[in-house]
Image (cartoon, rainbow, N blue to C red; front, side):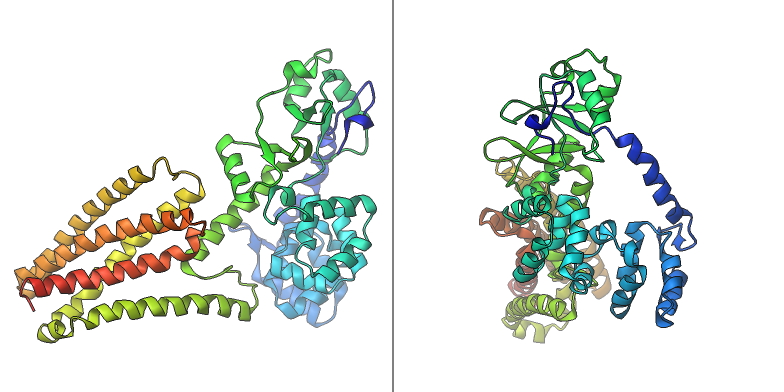
Amino acid sequence: MAHEEDLHDSAVAEGGSVSTETAPVHDHHEPARNSESLDDEDNTLRPSFIRRVTEALDADDQETVYNLVEPLHPADVADLFELIGPDYRAPLARAINDLLGSEVIAELNDYVRDDLVEELDPDEVAELAGDMETDDAVALIQDLDEEDQQAVLAEMEPEDRAAIESALAYPEDSAGRMMSRDVIAVPEHLTVGDLIDFLREDQDLATEFWEVFIVDHKHHPVGTCALSWILRTPRSIALTDVMKRDQTLIPVTMDQEEVALRFQKYALISAAVVDESGRLVGQITVDDVVHIIQEEASEDILRLSGAGDGDINEPIHLTVRTRLSWLVVNLGTAIIASSVVGMFQGAIAKLALLAVLMPIVSGMGGNAGTQTLAVVVRAIATNQLTSSNTVRMIFRELRIAMANGLSLGVLIGTGTWLLFQNPLLGGVIGAAMVINNLVAGLAGILVPVSLDRLKVDPAVSSAVFVTMATDVMGFFSFLGLAVLSGLA
């Protein structure tokens, strides 16, 4: 990061080497797009290509392996490591040696990356981390054991080590962990010409950036200048006359999910990260946020089902432990629901049709509750649902539940009447459908909102409670109405 005291009189600014970066990037990426290794329709590696790589590894033909992998984009090399069997990963890493660079490591799945890192010596890991952006290096090192972390950090250059140690001091999943310190910061007294001259002369600047941050004498960000403005503005104009003063600042301790929401809400390309005193300490760019959005969305979806990380590369024992714990919880809620059915054994014995039809009521209620739950959890995650509009949201979902319940009730009631020639049975199941849909809508919003108020992630526990509510109320309303109506 360029600090004010490091900058000259004539030009104190960073980040103009974009044009020199662009051409090599295209040259580097293009072979992968045209390679026979890729399926053009879904942009994935072809099975035939993977088979050729594994056959060459089986034959210990490292030269063929290298020649096959060399044209691939780093992201496709990372995909290759994930697609081949675990036993092939270490031999592949040895075969492609210098192709296994920081760009590949940064793209790897977490579990696959951990397996590969275990095969490397601390000095090799340190060399890879030194070539990475700070946020990618932190992601590589933070999952290591404490002993391995210290061994890797000891092998790094002092400047790189200090940056990573500083990032590791921030909370996990915070802006401080994910930010890049390769930020372009310049003092506010410069002109556009000063800035352009410095960008052309200084060779130690960030290689990729979209805007230059303007800072005051305390290194507090006071504005930003997009590269397009700099290129189209006369040299004599002061930066303070063209910079954008209104900017979105990211506190260093902000959770990454909130960071992603700010980027989405304000359509940001990059944003400055500030410490507790308001000093500029780094930046976050949209490419980092895309990964966060995907990660958080996948995490919420998988938590709703109790499937854990849902990563096919996750060790089997971890997957079993995560899924089994939630299945045990579901077993408990199923027992509660079955106990409700047990209360009406006599009614079911008198009219066996009740046992045939009651799963329809509970099942449809469960589906309706899941729909509401998915909408509410997403609304909470994206800050669409807050304390100011919760009541309105509750009444909205109740109206939806009533409309759906009445529609389904009429359908199932009419169908039951015609099928079994029993109008009372049709009326009972129709009424039960309306009741259970109302319960589903109410539970689908109240459960996640209540958990969120209690500081419990609503994506983790909500589904269990909503399903239990719809099962219990579905059985109770249908069987209870059957008894009250004299049907059984």
